[in-house]
Length: 163
Image (cartoon, rainbow, N blue to C red; front, side, top):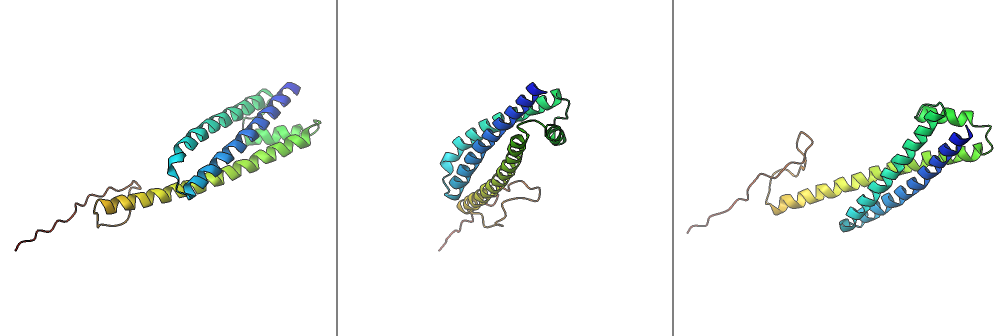
């Protein structure tokens, strides 16, 4: 159990570190969205994808180590492992690290949700601007009944002056 204990603990610490990195990127993404500085988002998306990949790998490592220790590779298994490890000298610190990871994950989910709303808002404004530029006088709705973006199909009206 000692080797497995060290491996699970190491994975937890790596997950916390990667989650802090993810939070930093998500916060920067939000700052750029609020400042409507869209040009920098592509590099942030790339960074975010890399960190999420690392985070996923650390989580898989923790799950593999939980299985090696005889626990399910999920939240219930992690909680059981923590409960059965309470006599370990670092039990309090490990539990704090786990709680920190849970809290950081919740913060990341919330930041990502808000960023998604900001992106959707930008998309709506862009669609409305495109509709105006294309001369569409139809509805300002940007999504059809199927939930997909609607395309402006109206053609501009041209007046003929005779006289």
